[in-house]
Length: 403
Image (cartoon, rainbow, N blue to C red; front, side, top):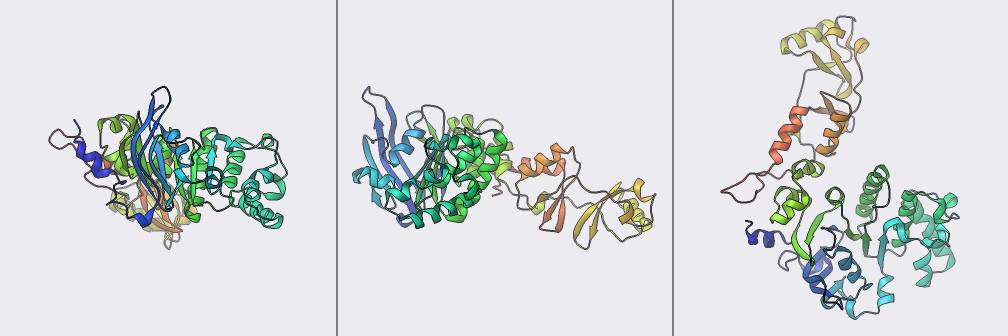
């Protein structure tokens, strides 16, 4: 069984863990009970820090969307307190308060009878912005989410792709620079390739703007990929664990969390683990201008068949012993790598490229500078380093956090 104290140790909603000045959203003892006696959320305490992206995850019926909608009073809580940027939202005027909180749902929730530009302009017009200021803001926001205002602004939602509609939904939610953005399964209605790209682009946008985001998702991989912290909920809105993605995956606080994130949580941790110097191997290197005789002698001394080809410290490809016997300089016989990975990417990105290209080596670059190579063996060693270790029959505790 799990030590109940482990859960509380990772619950960052504790007052002592989060100074009041850093909190943008604060829930205390929040409860929602419906007329039929169903308790959707029971006594939830949760803090979201300023500029943080927090993901609410859990099975169906755990109250994720209910929590989100109580924050902007689309659903009235039955008890407890909710503050947004120090303001008690429960006693505030609902419509006025909602205009200052961005809200995004699947497919953007756009008005079908309004153009893209008019959709984005909805809240600025409601709060009394003049036409010029509104038009400039619409153009700015469409550009910010990667849409051309002249091309897409006059269109209607049905004329856009799913990914484009979702971008418009985000732009509309950001129209008046809200301090808080609530997102309910925002990327669930688009295909996997578009979803991956939107997640990355949205995360970059959120970090650039410093917007505080509370996001509901059923996809633990999405939460791991983009969230600063993950709140894992069980039925009744019970907070099982609230922690950084690496800790949720590497040190589940309860058996429920361990079951929810899955037996492959070690693999999922690769997505939140950067490539470290210790993960790299360093095969022989030769310069593109070296003679083949010099390169052959180097490979024979190393007892390896392949070398990395550089020009200074810039990657230029690879060369084999067999190829070296057919030319005079390394540059004449070198071959290019199918792909490379940046040192700031995750181990998951590197592992995916290795699998996609059936590669023995994957060069890792820092800008243009060659750092070393990832191999299937080095990724395996990194994965073993990330795996938790059992101590005295207890649930795993992380031995080494790589993030």
